[in-house]
Image 1 (cartoon, rainbow, N blue to C red):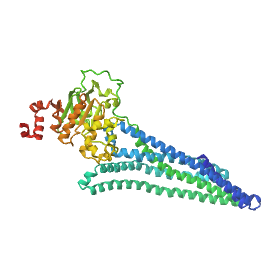
Image 2: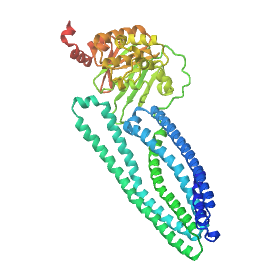
Image 3: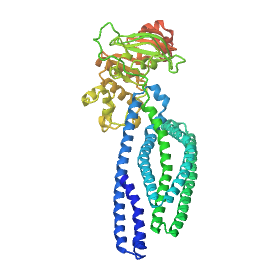
Image 4: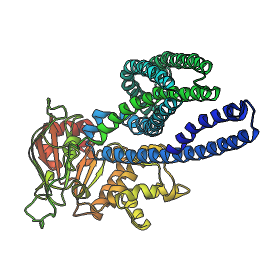
Amino acid sequence: MILEVTMDLLQPHLMSKIVDEGVLGVAAQNTDDFSIILKLGSLMVLFAFIGCLGGSLNNILVNYSSQNIGNLMRKDAFSKILSLSFSQIDKLGTGALITRITNDISQVENFISFFVRGMVRTGLLLLGGLYCLFRINTDFGLIAVCVVPFIFCSMIIAMKKVEPYFLSVQESLDQINCILQEDISGIRIIKAYVKELYEKIRFGKANDELLAKQMKILILFAISHPIACNFIYIGVAIMIWNAGKAVAAGTSTPGNVMAAITYIIQLLHAVLMVVFIIQNISRGQTSWKRVKAIIETDPELTDGHLNEEPPQKQSFAAIEFKNVSFSYSKEEPILKNINLKINKGETLAIMGATGCGKSSLVNLIPRFYDADSGQVLVNGIDVKDYHLKDLREKIAFVLQKSELFSDSIANNISWGKPGAELEEIKVSARIAQADSFINEIPEKYENIIAERGMSLSGGQKQRISIARAVLKSAEIMILDDSTSALDLKTEREFYEALTKAKPDCTKIIIAQRIASVKRANRIVVIENGSICACGSHDELLKNCDIYKDIYNSQIGEEAKNG
């Protein structure tokens, strides 16, 4: 940049000599000298080429720096997002996270690029231009010094008016991204309920709000730019008037006047460039604060101090809940004083009405959330003492909603065990009752699944998700209503194959169907966040009215008596 600006500042000086010595021949009794024009003109071309080279290299290096900084920021922000708890991600919102990791970081990249290139260039041109003006004529330098503050004042006033809108614009982008993400994810339900017009209107309103805020910014800059330009023209006019008097008085030459006018235009346009630089700086700073809020967020869930798990003792239950209470809002508890032991190798089923706390209970085991009070123990150790990675390596989890990725079926299953051989993947698929339908697909295990598994049925997605969990060498397997899309025959065959393949694995099954849980060693019935009964299928039919009501509603009195 120094090289580029130096070459720019030399050009008016050479032009001055061409006019005075080459064209007007001031030093040679008004006789022009073409050799001077040729020599100095060639130098101007050479200096222009050198300046172009310096500017090009500067652009390359600045863009390289800003893009790499943006790249690192995206990676850091994404890594931090993955380390945040579910509740922290819910608070930030999907739309806001998408905006921050895309648009906001792009704004920061622009900020870095404009700041480094613009501020350095402007600073050098200001200092260099003023120095050259004072060298030519002190009055010329003083004119420039007097005009510059007016331009700066107009910029500062405009920026103070505009700055509050930048955050508002980014928040409007958050809202647009949120609507877009929701509508793309829920496109089927939108079409099923013929809500296309409603969503178009909702998306249109969000866009109109963004447009209104952006227009306020653009209008303010549209007003401030001509004002700053007028100050430049006033400065040039004063310079020409003063220069005319100086030439008439013989204290300056036409070449010096041309050089001075060029210098003041360079200088004042450099100041005008600050308008655009400050605009990008203000927007970049706003975006940086939003990105920084993610990067500097401390995860709610932190690793424990346990470096090595002590040898297991048979007296320890695989999982134990001791006086556990939990709430999402810190107001109304979801779980109340839960006490429960789950033995190693046991199959425990959990039943209860929707919203009673079944999923909340099992989410405490891998520390998706932390209990408000009490302890959750795995192998006799508080889950808070484990390193999160070590704890979650012990657990295979199949969620209520089957999460699949845009990749091959084999790679989706091998998430449970990276680097698994194809035969291992096939064995897991057979246990999950997925092998039969996979083999009917032309590409079989290499078939690429569409985004969010849209190319598969609900039951197929569930079976691939189950196969992923089966493949993982885990001590504990949690099946959170993960067989709801399977028919009873397929579900029964899966549980029989799972019991045979993993007899020592502790299994927790959350289900709504009696047929899904009746083979479990024990069934826990939860009502309003508390355990109201625990026992085998036959025991609960005798002793638990809630379980009997569920059984009768599903199986019917006739089936029960038969």
